[in-house]
Image (cartoon, rainbow, N blue to C red; front, side, top):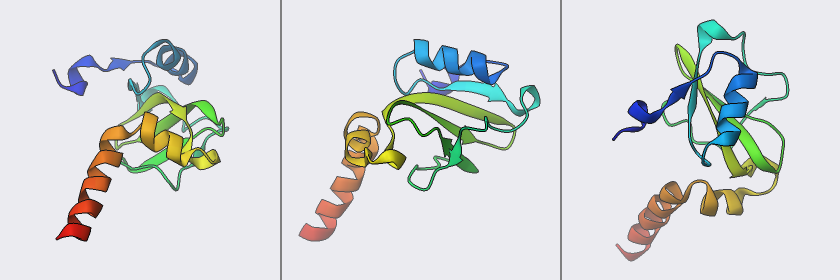
Length: 115
């Protein structure tokens, strides 16, 4: 089953954050852009996050149990990560929150070194 079929929606940031906190880490909650006005004020543009098709990625500044928002053309997604790479937890984030991307990156580097 694809992620699109399992994603739930929320119609305010408070509802979206509550739902993200209640789900497993990495579960995306979709928020239509028509339901909110921009991202919450405590979020900053992320320099270390992979966009994964998003126009922009934002993060709060909490070190753990941190929210990540991705902005697409007509909606946002919000999810909770265990570790925030923006606040000094990049290695923990790579291992716990983004292991498939970390493994893919290591495989590419390994292949380049070997080949």
